[in-house]
Length: 229
Ligand code: CMP
Image (cartoon, rainbow, N blue to C red; front, side, top):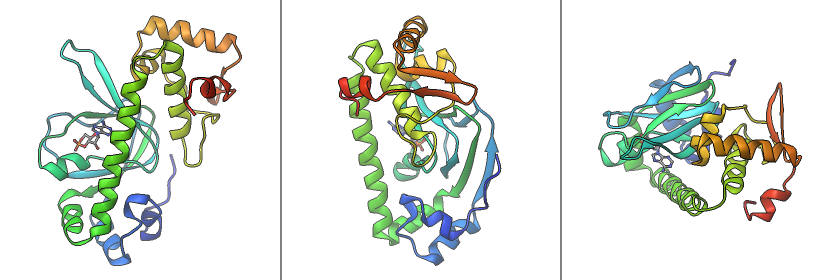
């Protein structure tokens, strides 16, 4: 995946960094590391100690943990422009969850110590982190509410989220990478059998197509009907 080197201008285009001045952006970039990884790679492991903040420049990832009976619980999906790894920096505790790539990803790693130092002296950066946490709590609330909905609603919500995250400016009708049924089931919080059945139903009704480029929802109508838009 060819991707331009990160410059202060490119970095300031990401909402979390937009309040920083040129000198701060340059300081962050002096100690950054860019990497490209394949799909299904563990980017951050729950319970590890970590001092790095990550920015996704391309690709999709999931944040997950496991229930006491060993079932995977997907907490959140991440895409281009999203950061992760901020929680261990904020509370100085071990990583709160696993983060895994769902597709090939381009990542940037920043020094957590420097980021924390900047937060102490730059109020707008601290506010941006607080806003990020607030956004995540809202998303988690929404996910929690959808968890008791029927299978079609849960799967449509997962597919719409994947479409919106797949690239910047993407919307619910955008093409997104065709993930396997096991992965879609984990994201939607459904069994694999129910996911398979529900996918067939969506295809038969003309709401979903799969092409060589990926998957795509074909209509906003089932999303609107379920108040997912
Ligand atoms: P950290 O705890 O350092 O490492 C795991 C990361 O996953 C965490 O920081 C956050 O960036 C991210 N994360 C954990 N829980 C959630 C959640 N509920 N929603 C979004 N991101 C999360």
